[in-house]
View 1 (spheres, rainbow, N blue to C red):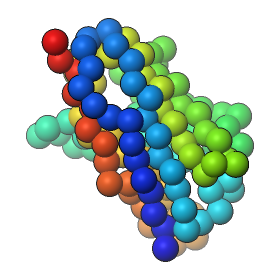
View 2: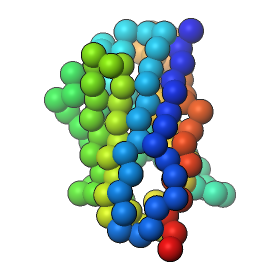
View 3: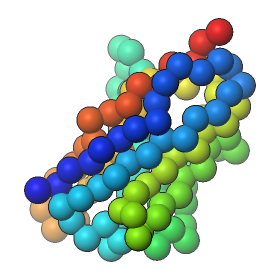
Length: 118
């Protein structure tokens, strides 16, 4: 059974930093790319960042490029999202996601709330 446990969200002032974590289980984590998405109130869920299976390749949404770093520790089955220079528009629920390439199903974490406000 695929499961994710996300943590690290919270309330932070503009310009602050947070590190989100997502611990995965139920599949061979080290074999697959992982992604982080976010969903702001009243908006669609959008892709934030993706990392390849070994971590050697990453990609980012333009809105977060230069402020956000995705990384992973395959020994811990964990993917991270380090967010710096946070802005109020970064306020959203953040989700980790795995797409199973064999059945084309998407598996989502429960989400962690990030609120950027003074």
